[in-house]
Length: 274
Image 1 (cartoon, rainbow, N blue to C red):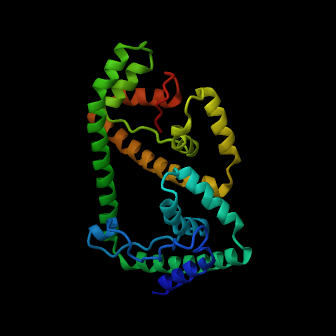
Image 2: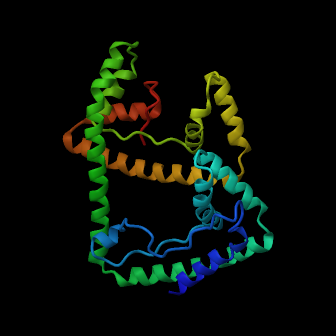
Image 3: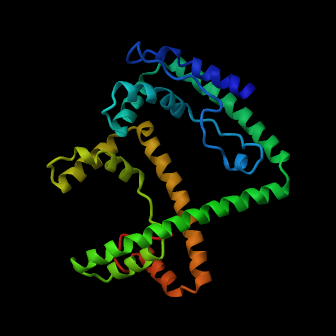
């Protein structure tokens, strides 16, 4: 309960920002259990694992984003993030210091909660959690494989109407086996979000423009994209590990060799593995 109390204090410090853009919009209050999605531990009938507290900037963004989305429904995520970053920069230093202090207190309590949590579960329960994580990753890999196989016909048709290169054939082969696709980088996520506004601008000019905008972003503005990209990359590496294990079990040595070549760029394909 102490941890929740500190979070309420953390949100209350943001009082001056409740009417940041309009007095009609009020930031949502913190809800300790504000999601219908249960954690892996809860689905196994175990106590939920303590959640790491958000950074000061992400706390600020989490509180402000719903208000901005409501007021500016036509704005894309990059524009919303940019607005939040600007408001964060304008925050009074004393208010920011209070947020940082409260976050430190939250993290101390989180660390204590993690120690208690680790001591409260048995070795058997830890193994159960590990197995459940492996099973979930395996299910995800199977879904990806089924989806990939349904896309093979499209890839083959595309090959018939395009120049067949040395890299296209192995790519289609690996795609049919459900090889995970490398997730986009932080910059790619940023560029994709703004792709609709390209209009008639030539692709090379648009790419140059987006790169300049990306370089001009502050660390706070980039953080959301980098966090999402890092999370996707972590999931990708785990999926690749499981995919390679499955290929070894099937005796797909040739496919593993192709994946290695694609990853090293020897075939010239943009599809890479880890």
